Image (cartoon, rainbow, N blue to C red; front, top):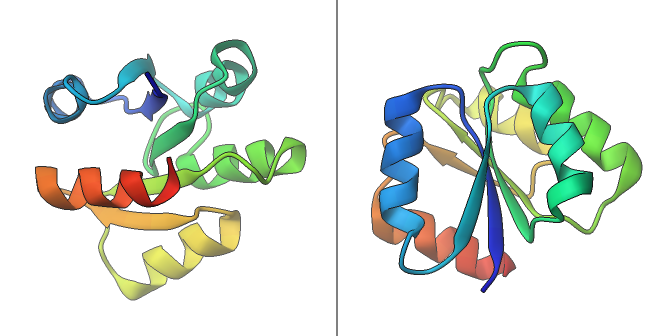
Length: 116
């Protein structure tokens, strides 16, 4: 089963994501951007769902640091900020795609399936 690293500091958002993914993927959680960067190496996920607003390192900086090491890992930005500028910043940082919260289960699974 493919593994997704869920980068999410908010417990309720994390619980929602696990509900969407539980029948389709394994998942692990990072609670801040530095944990994401570290866990990419230790957990070897197949995809990262990256919250952009997190403590320690935000999702954009975490994405940049991951991209310094690999360009092969799909990273999907997942954020409540849904402005075009937010999407542009996420893509510029190295995200492969962008989902805005609240995300529908269909849209989320469809977007993930494009990459794994």
